Image 1 (cartoon, rainbow, N blue to C red):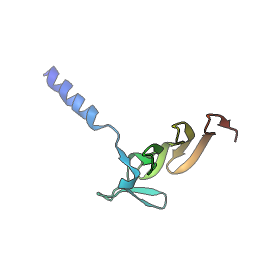
Image 2 (image 1 turned 90 degrees about the vertical axis):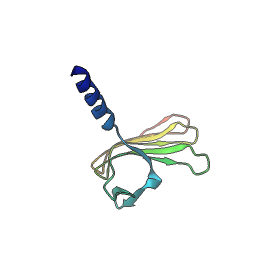
Image 3 (image 1 turned 30 degrees about the vertical axis):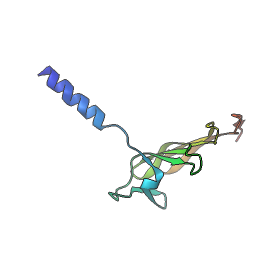
Image 4 (image 1 turned 180 degrees about the vertical axis):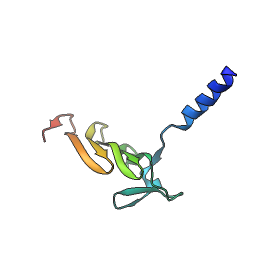
Length: 106
């Protein structure tokens, strides 16, 4: 019986993982992001890729369709461009860097 509960608990933990999609799979309306297939407000991480290089240029976290958590931007060389923190769609803080990694004072 203990093994059965361990298996059920493991399945539950795996099902709670966050969803990561390409931003092209979402529909934006104002500040909201919706799953194109279900039409429901998106919860998870959306990635934006450079069309030429296919490198990741942005990574944005959403909750209930609004930006919530960290949003990260990247230069072509892979260095961080910015890290912004959002709470329910509102910008809370932002840090920015030059392409060479130098912090931009704000």
